Amino acid sequence: MLRLSSEVVASTSGRVQQHAATVVLETARCATAVASEGVPASTAELDEVNVLLDGLQSPSTALREICIQVLTPSLKCFLSYIVGQVL
Image (cartoon, rainbow, N blue to C red; front, top):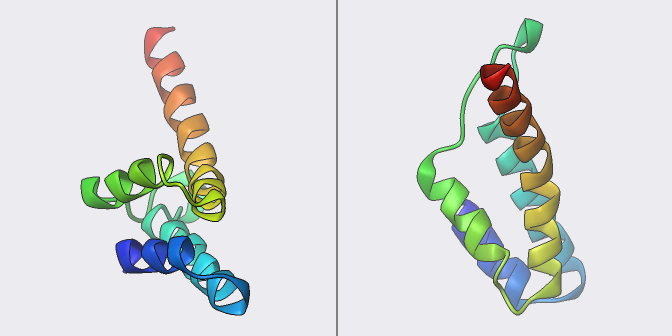
């Protein structure tokens, strides 16, 4: 679903692109959902992360921006975890 939606974002414009971007954001949000007390309810699969990382290299500005939007919170979470492990 994430790959298909990303391809639609990259290859369309206007309303279709906006709807596909919403699907990418919602799909990614569900893949990294947090249950009560900050415990992850689910985690993104490697394929999903690869789709987003590949999207950062897309010629489509819209897709690159969506991927940055999705990856930024995850990266912050990952970095805070790494820092917590080091300290």
